[in-house]
Structure formats: structure tokens, C-alpha cells
Length: 315
Ligand code: 8YV
Image 1 (tube, rainbow, N blue to C red):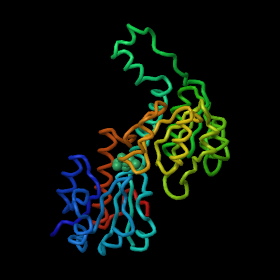
Image 2 (cartoon, rainbow, N blue to C red):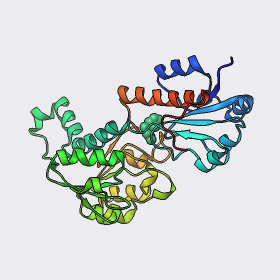
Image 3 (tube, rainbow, N blue to C red):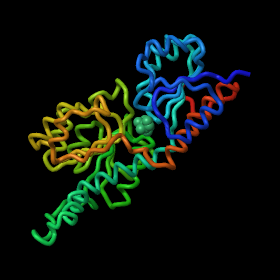
Image 4 (tube, rainbow, N blue to C red):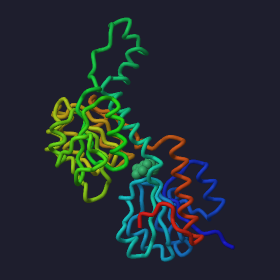
């Protein structure tokens, strides 16, 4: 029997590629020079899409594939998939929740600690010999005991809050409503009031139109010149140009960012700043987590083609 054909939108690690190619006929969309011609060539055969959280699948692509059954996303965020178009076409969508939660929370908290304590600059101080020639490294800012705000208390936000509580921080959060499981933490009704009472503000919202620019100029300025913003969610949740303005004029103290508008390209204004810590959308980037994510992408595709229930369905 012919293997099911799938369209692979972005690159995966070798171990995932091997497994996918064993079971499916894989069409490597990301390698095609002329995407439209490539899709037209294989369109009738494609039954599945394997994509990534930040790449997704748009309406035009979904509509170009008449036999598409499933879009399997390598990521918890599925905001880059046009869900309405998928629904209209009767296409299932899956993601990779839970397996990446701890890593994403770890990276967010690691960025907060690294930035606050100047760990990267301090290493340069040692390597460059400044320690001998100039003396001690400039004093940095304490983390434990400070006020932290978590904007979006989903799976990742909860793990961030837990970790921060472990650092004896004063934790508050903002979500659609107060959460029973979070009764040890203060609830704030808006992003702005949360920012006002925070030294550190984590953005752990889902992406998509509902949360677009929730962190706007007002929220950024409420966090203020001594505040630090940490984003491990989606760039679209923050008004990036307001963020850049605030960082440049020091209306915001510092930003730790794992995601950018138009990534992997990024606004060059970020590169000129000394009050940012920049990461290449790598919060889920550990071998352990990426193996679990790849397995889920595969398991969802296989379940669909074998007519079994999907392990982690979105729709
Ligand atoms: C990426 C993510 O999917 O989970 C998400 O929503 O954005 C990330 O885990 C990852 O970089 C793989 O593309």
C-alpha cells in the first residue's frame, strides 16, 4: 500500500525526519524554491501537513490541498494555522502541549536571572581580563523577594509562577478570571495593573488576534524604568515598536525576548540596545523536549491515517 503523503513545512531534527520518512512520503516544502509550483505538483496527494509552531499553515495552502486531513503542529502554539480555514475544509489540527511546558518556563526564569545578575556581561568581564585590570564587576539587581507578574496563567504561566515562588518572589498574575489553583498568588484584573505592581513581568499568553498587542505602550510604561519584561510566548502579544521606543528612551528597564516579529529576521534596533537579552525562539529547544514534540507530531499523523483518535487534538 502506498505510504500517505505529507507536506513538511519547516525543518526537523534528523531523528524526526527518519521516522517520518519511514512511514510517509515526505514532500519538503521548506526546500522548494518555487513554493506555488511545488505545491501544485503534489497537491492531490497530500493528506497531512507537518509544520512548526511559528510557521503554521495559511488559508491559501489549506485550500490548495483538496485531500488534506490533518495539520500536525510541532509546538504548543497553533496561532499560525488558519483554524477557520481548517475547520471549513474539515481538516483536523493537532499540537504538542505539556511536553514543552517545563523547558519554556525554565528559559523564561533563566533569562530573568541571567539578565538581573548580569551573568553574560560578568563572564565577559572574566574572559577579557577586566577583573584583574578594572577590579570587581559592577553591582547588579537582586531577584529573590521581588515582585513578579505573570500575564497568562496557562500551563506555561503556572510553571513560571511556581518557579518564581521558589525564589521567594511575591507572585501575582492576570488571567481571564481568578483561578482556584492559584489562590496563593494575587490576582490582578488587567495587564496594566499587573505591570504596575511588578518588578518583572512575564508574558505567557497564547498567541493570536485576541491577545495582539495586549502589552502596549501603557503596560510597558507601567512596568517602568526599573522593570523587566520577559516574553516566551509570541511576539504579536507585545507592541514591538512601543517596546523598542521604551527601551531606547529607558522608559522600560530591560527586556528578555525569545520571539520577534518577522523572526528569524529581527528589527535591527534591538541589536543596538544594551538593555535586552535576545534568544532565537529557543524556549522549547532541548533535546529531550524536541524529541517528545517530534514524537507527538508523528503520533498524531499516524493516528489520523490509521483512523485512531488523535493524541493531542486542537480541532
Ligand atoms: C516552536 C513554539 O514551535 O511551542 C510553540 O508554540 O513556538 C515553539 O516550541 C519551536 O521553536 C519549534 O518550531
